[in-house]
Image (tube, rainbow, N blue to C red; front, side, top):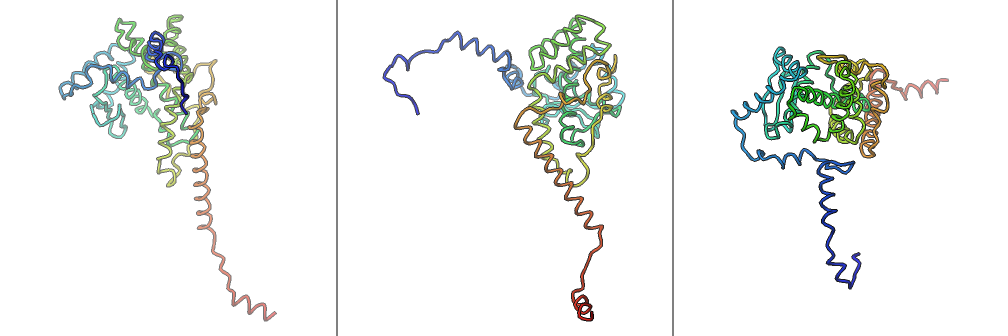
Length: 335
């Protein structure tokens, strides 16, 4: 109920404009934990080219610019060269939400209606997946048990975020700060700062894998996990293959997580000593109550389905015990 008051001065009191401006700027720049959650939406509206209708020639020009920038980076060039050798095609598709890698078609698709550096980030991520797929290091999280699917999904996104930071740093060292400045204004700015701090303190950490592993661990130090957990949990809820086969029952081991962290150049950052095991519970614990509840439901449902299939198989394999009531009666009377 609204509190009635006769004091008109209280009703017409103006808010403090200075505090309002400071709070708005604080949210816009992503300060603390109160930053805007949908920073991509903000960047979308701030871009001046979003309303322009892209043509095929424009898309070709944009892709050419992205590739020319990426080739300046040693790691980026390794990904592009590998994509050329394996025949991975990079296409634009406005029907794709953001980007997608199709292993069976050997194709990467990008949505052209987004800022150029956003496309660069997603292009790097898809090229990384293509590089892993060619070496048998790309795993589908939906094939694993629910807890392990969450862990693997997190690890893959942490790996691609670290790779974008690494390529951005390599470009920065060559005098191209566009991607690095974009990273510093994105939701992964903490990862970029962490990588920069260790790279500046010891340049050898770039090849030794220390800077990469620190950046990887930093990905798990914020609430960004909640968004990615929600996405993979929803996919598991919609996965219809679970009830038909053993889909979603594989167990994840450390060797698989060690393998996918292989690098085109430098040491595998997951194989370093002195760090937590990649399957440590700190990497996989789900603290968000909503996600934890849905994850529990998925595990319960799959356990119930597995038990139901086991009972049906046992019933089908066992002989039918049919009792002849009339014969039993005659036998009892004869006795």
